[in-house]
Amino acid sequence: MSQEDSQPSFAEMINAALEHTIPVAHKMGVTALEARPGYARTRVPIEGNGNHFGVMYAGVLFTVAEVLGGIIPMATFDNSRFYPLVKDLQITFKRAAKTDVEAEAKLDEESIARIASAADANGKADFTLDAAITDAAGEVVATTHGIYQLRAHGR
Amino acid sequence: MSQEDSQPSFAEMINAALEHTIPVAHKMGVTALEARPGYARTRVPIEGNGNHFGVMYAGVLFTVAEVLGGIIPMATFDNSRFYPLVKDLQITFKRAAKTDVEAEAKLDEESIARIASAADANGKADFTLDAAITDAAGEVVATTHGIYQLRAHGR
Image 1 (spheres, each protein chain N blue to C red):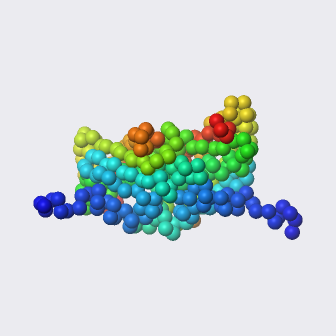
Image 2: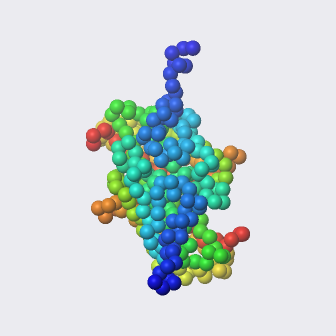
């Protein structure tokens, strides 16, 4: 096994940290499945997160998508200099979620370059992130449109 | 003590039911403080809901406000015929919430009459609800704009 294989993946590090960084999301069972520069995918189980009709609660769908706006910047930018925060998030519910769900979002290379450059110059940079949440059948149950900011530490 | 005084308030009934209707919100500690036709106020503690910086997680702020769109219709319309669901919710974060927070929203009498009439005629009626979330100092930490629907059972 190479040294690279024996190191935890970025998703594994995110999951190990989540209990302490966002205990509420950890308690829901939110986990990162993939996390790399410009892309992340998360998952949350229906177990414990449904209402009395067996439909996943809106706040859980919000959470599994919202955290992408934290995970992607951490996997993409210099964490020693910058951290992400959420400024605004709109979630549109398309259909009832009755299974475990996954959420995914991506930042294209052009956006990444623009954000890095603006944060470098101004100490902060706003960016948008659109996520899709899908159920076990691959149907989109909700979409989110978030406005986040990458901000320099101590600012 | 009159019979009226000895009966639980609508807010107390909501709180007793929340553990079963939305277990996730109950686990966060969300409670209804007031609930009457056209108005509701909710609360959630910072304890257990913060991140590692002691700031309340965005998904908890979402939840304490989103549930108003369930509570107000239940306190306002005929629950034997109609139930509420959320279609779209936008939350705008104004400042970090570092204390317990309260959320409140109201539906004016004109809107209530319109919704009741439309639901009666069509079996469903969309409505918007704007909520404000304030911290212990009375500062607004976030606002929400939600689109909900009152819908006839079995539809």
